[in-house]
Image 1 (cartoon, rainbow, N blue to C red):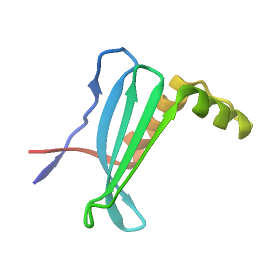
Image 2 (image 1 turned 30 degrees about the vertical axis):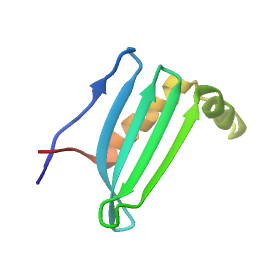
Image 3 (image 1 turned 120 degrees about the vertical axis):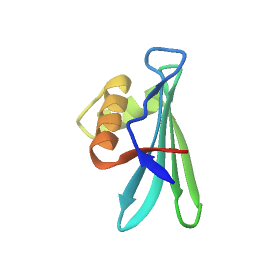
Image 4 (image 1 turned 180 degrees about the horizontal axis):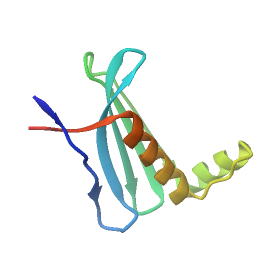
Length: 98
């Protein structure tokens, strides 16, 4: 069973975050995990709830800042990750498996 609750775990550094949420994309449910480590490393994991297929990627602060600069809408790393966290808060439901 899954219960909907907010879940934000602060890690060692004040800017370290780990959160997992259940999101619906194109009618399929996925577990999305966002983790910020050492204040400058973003790890994203997406898992299909039915097939258990997983996609993982890691991005350092320099890569994210360069990418946002190329789009013409530069964001500092901590601003980008804060925006990503906020977006997940708005469109997804945080869950813990009990």
